[in-house]
Length: 240
Image (cartoon, rainbow, N blue to C red; front, side, top):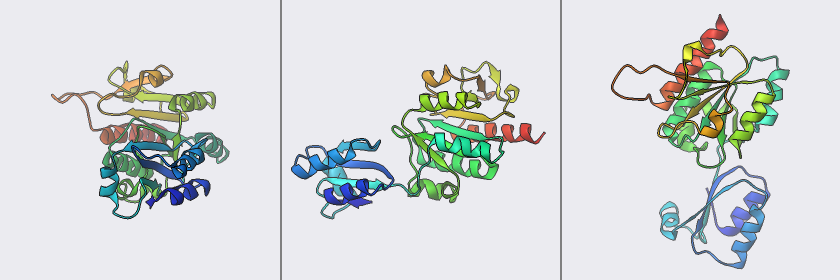
């Protein structure tokens, strides 16, 4: 965590990986204008919040600005994809569309690392980030598996399709069971938030929409459990 306007500006200019910046809602000064000028061209999540929220985070002289530094260096999909093919891999990627629960994210990352998933893709806004809680929940897995943070997931899906990836989304709207999907190809599995699922925009680009059968009274599985089921179905198919 970095606090103070000048310190945050220096972190931005130094190229630090910043998850988000909290700015006091009514902050107006010459230095704050310099901060927003430094933010231009950077896809950093900036939230205007009451000063009381910042005060709960730190009692230091924060000047109305606090930045949270990422625990890792994020990757870009366009860099990871060719590297995996160059290494001769049959890639398996997992895209998380709108997952906001840090504990679920950590549990998913732990499964991915254990199963040998090649990378996790998350959006830069409206999503979990790799913070200390996520790293702890993942048992350190997030420190060893590439995480791509993308400004536009739809464009990332299009790029993956153009690169030869098979795109499979888990959704209650699926027209086949997850065991019927072909996960033996270079594949990106998309998992959505438990409340809204994968966005319609992303669903329209998928090659296959699959569902996990439900036999009880509860309508859906926890997203970390559902992710594990699909990931290990892919591993089973590939091991054959």
